[in-house]
Image (cartoon, rainbow, N blue to C red):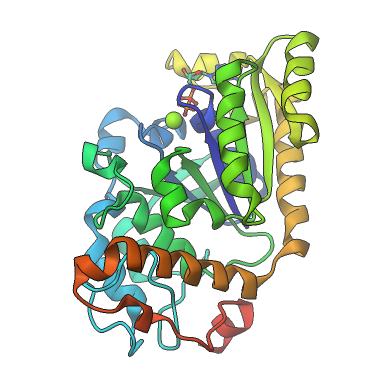
Length: 326
Ligand SMILES: Nc1ncnc2c1ncn2[C@@H]1O[C@H](COP(=O)(O)OP(=O)(O)O)[C@@H](O)[C@H]1O
Ligand SMILES: [Mg+2]
C-alpha cells in the first residue's frame, strides 16, 4: 500500500507520518519510509541522531544508479540519460517489491530499528532552489516517482512517503501514485487552503484524499474542519505529550503513546487498507503514461534530444501478476 502524507509546512506531516510508520512497524508488517519533504526531518522523527540523519544516502544523488537499475533490459529505454522521472516501466524493466533486496535499496535504503520492528528509510536529500522548479530533470522527488512507478506492492506491505504538497508533485504526477493521501491540516484557514488546492488537482485523477486534522484543541476546531472539508475529514489528532517529549530529546517507548493517538493511527491503517479493493493497475499504468507524455512534450524531449513517447510500452500493465512472472 502506497501512502502519502502531505500538507502545509509545520502542519505535522513528518510527525504523523513517523507515528504511522512506528505503528505499522509495531504490528510487524514490512515498511519502507520515504522522506520527500522539503525539510528532511523524517529520520530524526524516527529517532536517528543528527549524525546518523546527515549520513543517510540521498536518492537524489543516486538517480543514475536508480535509472540504470530500473530500466533493466527494457529495449525502449536505451540509456539512463534519456530516462526522466516519468519514464514508465515496460517489458524488461526491473520491477521492485516492498520487501526484497535490490540495487535501489542497497544504494539508498537505511535500516532503522524501532520499538518492535525495523523499517527501511529512504530520503530524497535536501532540496535546492532548482528542485522547486516545475520542470526539472534532476528533480529529487523524481527518484521517488521512479521508485513508485516500478513498485509492485501487495496488501499488508507499506510504503509511507512524507511529502511536500507542491507544484513539483503536481507537474510530474507524483501526487497520483498513492493508494491514499492523508492531507494533514491544522484547523486554520491556511491549513484548509492547502487542502482546497490539492483537491483541485486530485479530483480529475481519482486520487483518494482524506484530511487528518492535527493540533486540534477542542470541539470548535473539529467543527471548523468539518465545515471546511466536509466528509473528507477522516479524523483529528490533538496535542501529543509523547511527541513533545521526543522533541525535548526524551523519547518514550512507542507503547506509551496516548490511547487516543494510538487509535487514530489504527484508523489511518484501516482507511489505507480499505483502498486495496479500489486498486486498478491498468488505470495506474495509464496515468503514468499520461504524465510521461505531458512531461515529454513540455520539456523532456527537448532536454534529452529524443522522442520520449517511444519509451512507452503500449501493451504493458504494471500489476502483481507481471511482478510474479519476472
Ligand atoms: N500532534 C502533535 N503534538 C505535539 N506536537 C506536534 C504535533 N504535531 C506536530 N507537532 C510539532 O509541530 C512541529 C511541526 O511538525 P512537523 O511534523 O515537523 O510538520 P511538517 O512536517 O508538516 O512541516 C514539530 O515541532 C512537531 O513536533
Ligand atoms: Mg516535515
